[in-house]
Image (cartoon, rainbow, N blue to C red; front, side, top):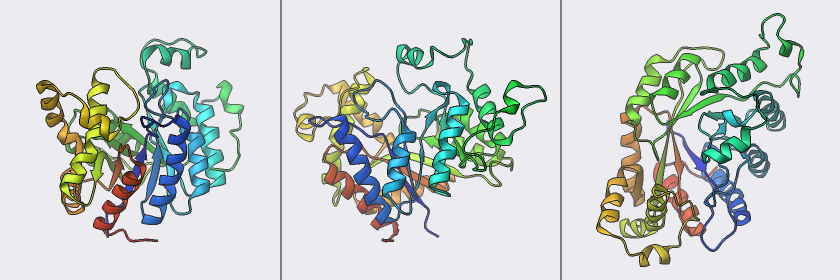
Length: 337
């Protein structure tokens, strides 16, 4: 059986384009990979960042599910501390009602933005000190089970639309915290290798080892999310990756501008320290020809015991981005549907 391949899309804004262009690019890419045989298409939540266009993955999920036929479409993820759990339950039950069996609910605990914007997103909530992710997650699950304690004010609320289950739950993480939590709850788990400093294999193997069957999942499902860029040759792939490498350098300095063009990346005056930093980042950005990437990704999947590989690709040229996903699919043996 071919290990499933999926897509994580941040709706990157490219230099010379608009956020509206980025959203249209997401729709086009989803249609493209749907035909290639990719399994899932997940959308991320970010706020007040010039580099990404979508702050509302649930809106994009509906658009992409309507524009495709086979993909599971979901959130990678909904940043739960930014949202009332009841609203999350209602919106994803609505999506599940419209596209039964095709929706995923991935949940994260980071804000997806800077501290000031996070306060603006949450300022109408009841003030609470510390991290309330667990409380919100428990409440979200209670909206599904209906097991609020006797006398709880929420016990009488009927979640709309009635009779529709929540989609499958996945917790997102970049350390062992989310892995352990997902294992204990019995949900799926997705590890963000593309920006994590924690070892992916340790997190995913630990999740699998500790997983407890529950109503949220009878068996573990571990997704390894990673960054990859593919082209017909090694040289072409390395050249395409220059935009992503420069964007990463800038993000590390707190500069969240659009993805630079290839011409801008080639003309940039890299210092020796910046070139060293880019070399050190090669473990988080997998670049190469189709056969090179196939070998790398299969080795990573085996090492981490992943059930699925999810690819994010920040290529400035959208035709080259689509071609990258196509080449990986062909090398992987997905085949057209």
